[in-house]
Image 1 (cartoon, one colour):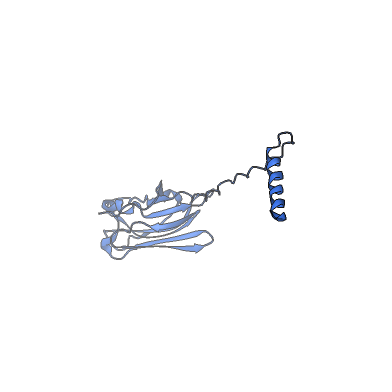
Image 2 (cartoon, rainbow, N blue to C red):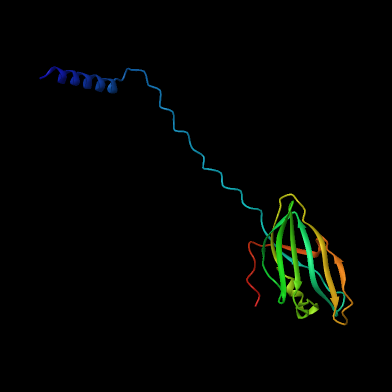
Length: 173
């Protein structure tokens, strides 16, 4: 046998003896692998709400012709429903204010006592956590009896009816 082979065999015997040595001091256990916590889930976005206008005519001759609103404390996620014969737009005015403007394109589009359901589910908003929803602006109303009966109504937060919703409702038939 060659000498280098003997050295390898001796080394193997020493290693085997060390593994089977019962009188030796116990060796320290290898530290357990640190448990890795799962990454935190991203925060859920604040809930969204469906907004309707609660305007009601003073009598059967009064109608809603247009409105200009400035919302604070919420972002407009989507315009969900536009009344027939209307244009409804939303834009961000900066400084946490959202502008919402709507108007009838023709007189037949004015909203009367018979068409109040057209004001339901207009917008999907996402309120800012911890901030109250504020509303400024005006509504322009008129009367069917004559052309001179237009009045401006000041908008208040009571003008908005809000209900939790994850998305816009299906289009109205």
